[in-house]
Length: 287
Ligand SMILES: NC(=O)C1=CN([C@@H]2O[C@H](COP(=O)(O)OP(=O)(O)OC[C@H]3O[C@@H](n4cnc5c(N)ncnc54)[C@H](OP(=O)(O)O)[C@@H]3O)[C@@H](O)[C@H]2O)C=CC1
Ligand SMILES: O=C(O)[C@@H]1CCC=N1
Image 1: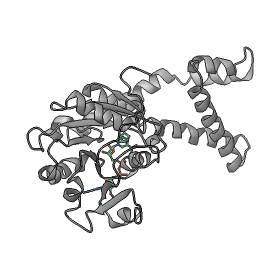
Image 2: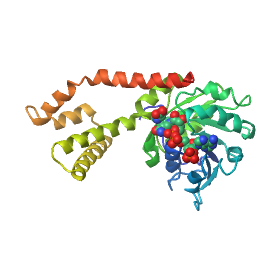
Image 3: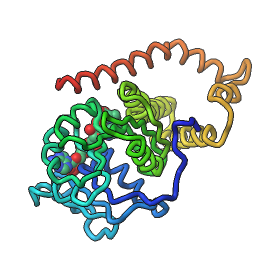
Image 4: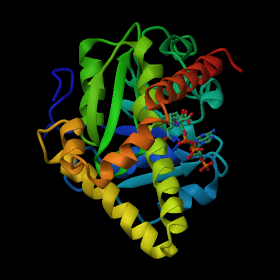
């Protein structure tokens, strides 16, 4: 573990509100709801639609409010919260921040997970002195295996950043980075699960073309990806060594690897990551 990652801790996380619990906010929420996570419960969450809030009906650990049913839902949710996690789309962020600005508890830290929204843009909509921290998580947070980059804004102290790191460390690895690295975190790990799922889709389709039925192809590919990932997780070896362990000299893997390397992966990944970062920069410019 890098020294900028936080150890999992047993200290209780304070009262938390989450504005927007869709794909990403919902993944963080599910991670935080794990029985071994020590957090003040209930966690208050808001959604736009009543249908999304209704999914939490009967839950004792989550209070869900929708802005469709209650136009004050977001303002109500942040009252009493020491951490406010904003999980709405980037282009909704400014309106939501303006909406809650007057109802934040003194000392509350505002955490945005939005791509392409700088801390300064959020700070500009808040009363003077409210600390803001950016986090760039990913969806495996839902099972406690997330990877999150964290960068404090101008008013965030080491304690604020440590608190946010502690929260995200309960749902995976949480690294403190510079804010100018957040777009690259989005490109690598924020979006990263999608690249792996694309690999799974393409590999499954190739397996079907090689003669397996859909179920067989899915089983072979899924178990290979999950097994290889677990093997890496349980090993001190580099991916290169683990790859070489599969690749017998003059064997079959070697031939496939030669073909794959002809695809120019280094340039391909450079281009993909650069396109991802460019999109964050466009969002930042309001495009
Ligand atoms: N998806 C990912 O893997 C990642 C996403 N992010 C960032 O996370 C943010 C959210 O993305 P994602 O989760 O994919 O988006 P989703 O559309 O899945 O979720 C958005 C959530 O916001 C809610 N919402 C919309 N408007 C309001 C409102 N006015 N008040 C309260 N809640 C509202 C929606 O409610 P309803 O369900 O009712 O519509 C939904 O719960 C984005 O800023 C994105 O950049 C960052 C890293 C990874
Ligand atoms: O695609 C997106 O914009 C978000 C940010 C990182 C992952 N998903």
